Image (cartoon, helix red, strand yellow):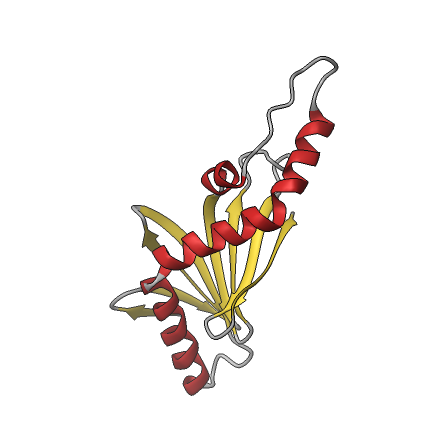
Length: 147
């Protein structure tokens, strides 16, 4: 089944997932909204509304997410980098600023528990992704390596 929203465009509804693409900073970014009961119109409408609010403020969220992830994971990225060096190869430390710049937005998930934003890692973690969780109410709660 397909549904259309003036902001989110055409979305596919499959069991408990609403999926689509939204333009962020000139890129089409995949999103998924998970709903326990797709027939619960009130919950579906609320989650879509919350997701649209999140997207409308995404430039601010993205900046905060990148800063949070950089503070949480830069030391770990430097450890991974040191582990990957060949003998005699120089170690060039990644700064928090550079870490945040290297993150590449990949996709966004949203559900009753809030958001999870996936970023490609630019090989800082050998091709894993950076996953950041949070809620609109409480802000960013956790950043981790995934995949």
